[in-house]
Length: 123
Image (cartoon, rainbow, N blue to C red; front, side, top):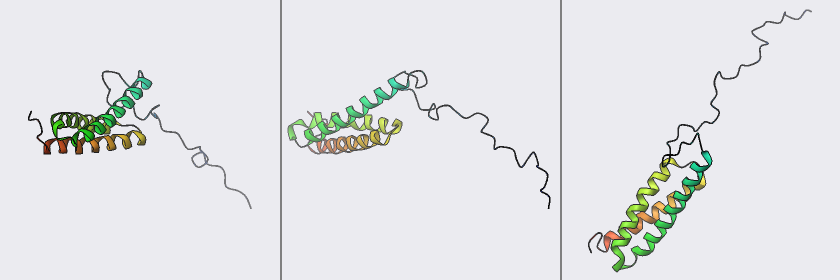
């Protein structure tokens, strides 16, 4: 019994994609004017700082939300924390950042709600 003659099309190695991107996330928006492609470490560090800032602002807004006389500060910090948290959530790169963003964002929203309940922006 003879084996069939090798065919060039059946024995060819699978071809790799013509142009695979080196880094798949080059399309993320630049943060504070820094291009991710030119300085990824700086971009990541700034994002971690903003995530930590969201978490801290959210916790402070939540704490101030329980104080009736601090309604203006709780409302302002809550508004800042929600805005910053939404931006960080939109551009986050890792699961850990998303966890802290959601916790800080939720705390800021509750603190803002409590601040509005105690008088909001009224002095």
